Image (cartoon, rainbow, N blue to C red; front, side, top):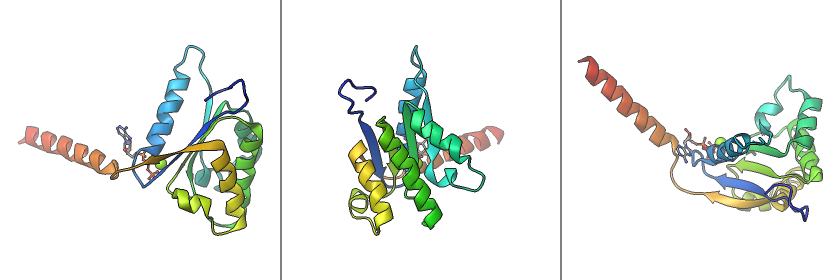
Amino acid sequence: MFNRSDGKNVGLLLWGNVGTGKTFAAHCVCNELLQRDEPVSVFITSLSRVLNSGWDKSETVTRVRNAPLVVFDDLGAERSSEYALENVFMLVDERYRARKPTIVTTNLTLNELKNPQDMSRRRVYDRILEMCVPIYFDGPSRRRETVDDKLLIMRELTAEET
Ligand SMILES: Nc1ncnc2c1ncn2[C@@H]1O[C@H](COP(=O)(O)OP(=O)(O)OP(=O)(O)O)[C@@H](O)[C@H]1O
Ligand SMILES: [Mg+2]
């Protein structure tokens, strides 16, 4: 994935329904890189959060340009204002031109990514589809499992008290 001698750094597009483990999987990759003897630094950012008021544009651009791995979490969840779309394009294009590996997670379907509603999204998604190999996350939301686990713990705790 990293620093291939042919310059074709391969990224990942983790797509699928809510709660299927896309962000979790991206974080697993990051943890693995950070735990190496020579840790590889990563920049994880949610495109919707980064564009909220108060974001440091120049710092974000520098990190997107330089980090050995960038994770753009939740593509498509950003507001569809002209400002948000312009800046999403700017960040994705920055990374595209850096030719470094990128992981993108999204609830958008591959079909939606291939057939966007407008030109500004097309410019973003086209770059991502070139940079990243799509991996589909299937199944029900894992958040249900988390809730079930918590219910079990709660039952055990209340049983202990009685
Ligand atoms: N492989 C896994 N093993 C254990 N728990 C997991 C695994 N994958 C995901 N989870 C748990 O399932 C929940 C949902 O995972 P996650 O947030 O990664 O989903 P997501 O696909 O990114 O959802 P969304 O589309 O809403 O952003 C989290 O609580 C996460 O810790
Ligand atoms: Mg997620």
